[in-house]
Length: 172
Image 1 (cartoon, helix red, strand yellow):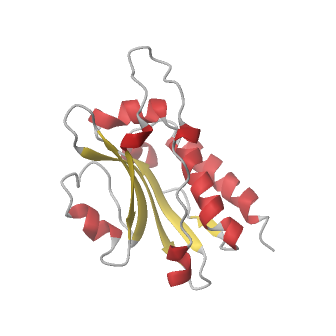
Image 2 (image 1 turned 120 degrees about the vertical axis):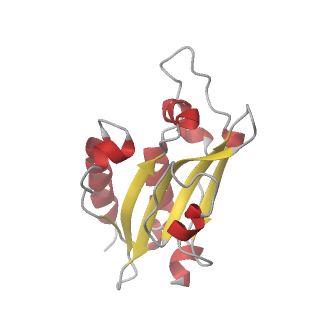
């Protein structure tokens, strides 16, 4: 198990910034993005439930990588998106959930200014695939559209699945 967790490499955030389409949306400051790795001490779900924002994102798995954003308005650090996963018996990563926050104080601005799906693809490629650790995506969960507050959630899930399949082909 230690092999998996020692492998995580955090990509630079500024590579994944994008210009918001709305002129009223101020771009993110990448120095305010925080990566939180949830494992070892407690399960990710227990650790997150004890935080001050337990209802804005649901984590139901042992391990997770959470992106948070420190708001300029009040300096609070709020969850934005999480990738939750388990490790199977062959020591491969099985992604169980990719979910954005339901917290409207950060969601719109973060999703408009940061390409978090491709950020996670880069993190997975650098941390696991290039180190010969296969990554799989579990089936699309029922009710994904409602849980993610997005009408394109299932579509994005399929994009992620295809990208994992492509990345895994580099592993013999």
